[in-house]
Amino acid sequence: MSADSKISMEDPSEFRPEFKDKTEFRDFNIHTVPDRVKKVYQAMHKNQTLQFVKDKMEKWCKFDHAEMSVLEALETLSTFLDECDPDVDIPNAMHGFQTAEGIRKAHPDKEWFQVAGLIHDIGKLMAVWGEPQWCVVGDTFPVGCAPSKHIVFDAKFFADNPDMKDEKLNTKFGIYTENCGLENVLMSWGHDEYLYQVLKANTCHLPDEALYAIRFHSFYPWHMSGDYNYLCNNKDMEMLPWVKEFNKFDLYTKCPDIPDIDSLIPYYSDLVEKYVPGKLKW
Image (cartoon, rainbow, N blue to C red):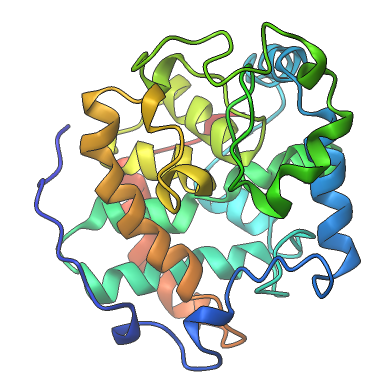
């Protein structure tokens, strides 16, 4: 399924809650960020190696952990708190509805985009099922090559990562070739990649634009700083504007105001059944 290629580039101020200025989001100043955030990223950057990611792909891409619908997955996350997000301290399920409603307001004609907003974080089920948050939440990055300087905390936590001592893995391209395409790049393991793999393995009618937003919404060094473009092919660059558009809603709709979820369930139940029907194998 192909989506309309025209993006209505909305001013974030049109849908961003006014509880704080947008410049205050994603403040990762190491001197002021909560310790819980630093601990997650320190463990992530130390332990997310190429082999670690391959092992997690092997474990989770068997899809033998559960069978549940999208809305059941959201309900499971109704008490889950993301330890590495400095901008929000409400359960993750609430954030999904906030994101979807922000998209719905700006893009009322793009149902698939609204569904992407609703479900984009439900791969965090892995944390509910026992995975430590450092391999579930947070910004993502390619493994198998040198880290970008724009990764959170200036990549300083990578000093203890074994891959950085391997000459095959610590260079700009590492195991990859120029413009090989992100479909051929292994990303650090987390909820983005897991949900993308789940959707590919189940019945899913979302267009590529939505799948890119889901898979790469935490890949901030790419969609915010322009890093790793040398690994991208033409399709990746065509999809990038949609990832950027999605990011505005994922980030700037975070606020303490909780949507009336009970009143929204009928609307989103119909959309989910249209685009990601039935029970999924997780």
